[in-house]
Amino acid sequence: YTALRPTPAAGSKMFSSFRLPTSLELESVEQVSHNVKKFRFKLPEGVSAGFPMTSALLAITFPSQSWIPVIRPYTPISSPSTPGYLEFMIKRYPSGKSSEHLHSLRPGSNVLFAGPISGPKYDPKFGHVTLIAGGTGLTPCYQLMRHILKDNPLETNTNANTNNKNSTSLSSSSSSSATQIPTKITLVIGANTIGDILLKSEFDEWEKKYPDRLEIHYCISKPEGGPERPRGGLDKAFLEKTVFEPKSESSAVYLCGPPGMEESLAGKRRKGGVLEDLGFKKDRIFVF
Ligand SMILES: Cc1cc2nc3c(=O)[nH]c(=O)nc-3n(C[C@H](O)[C@H](O)[C@H](O)COP(=O)(O)OP(=O)(O)OC[C@H]3O[C@@H](n4cnc5c(N)ncnc54)[C@H](O)[C@@H]3O)c2cc1C
Figure 1 (cartoon, rainbow, N blue to C red):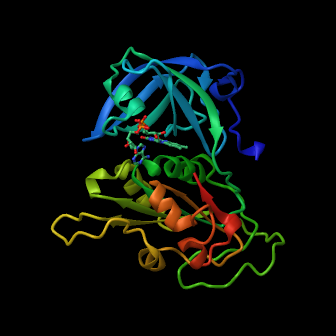
Figure 2: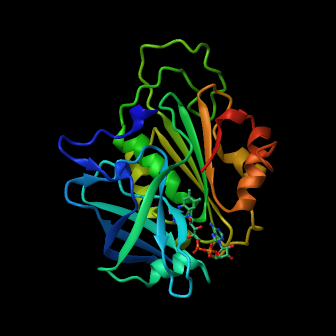
């Protein structure tokens, strides 16, 4: 997987190779919804983030009421190969030690970052990737999607795969085929309201730009003007209707969301769970 580490431009350095926690200056803050802000931190000149897929960085903060540092992982939404800055989408939790502190910061403040810490690996041989996200669980899914669709648009997939709902054929062999098949993506998003969906305009744009590679399903628990769905709407019945046939050797699923959602889909202590019931292989179920 080291091949997935982005190649820096000649002469540039990578933040992820810094050994010690590094203080970064907050360049700008944008309120994107009632409880989410987008933060842009300056990277030193000529330095790109350079983290491997998938990764998060650790923010080390010192909220005023806390005498020990608070350390929390956050997923950069900016490209690892873009020099000059790092961006995050961060939700404020009521009484959240780290998130309330970060939301109180103004441009010019500094935050200490360490890492990266590695999340689940991504293999370009996956012909079809299903991403299931609840709440801020969208940020790692966004990071991986951007990598698959944009940063590495011409990845080679040598395993034949099932790429549409009507096809149930398995990869007939793992041997290479001459054709290059770009990885397809199904994204399933769970949120309270449409307004709570982070990065919605980016997803809309990608859906238009990559109609043959990307399909997005929304599971909204409080739809405007419609009946409320019970909490935990990302259940077996919903996924059965939306997720592609996961029977191919090259299908993988990644999920990130509240602990209850992860447990129900990936199983308690990763045993059983809805995704296995739906036919995903255990070693192809990844939790961020
Ligand atoms: C790998 C990884 C990547 C992450 N990336 C992001 C990201 O890009 N953006 C982002 O906003 N967050 C992200 N998180 C979550 C983040 O690390 C913190 O957990 C979150 O900001 C809350 O920390 P806190 O100190 O503010 O809250 P705490 O002081 O730890 O908790 C305060 C209250 O909030 C509740 N709470 C805390 N976290 C959650 C949660 N995830 N879901 C529901 N309730 C919660 C707690 O139950 C508690 O009641 C990520 C987490 C992981 C593990």
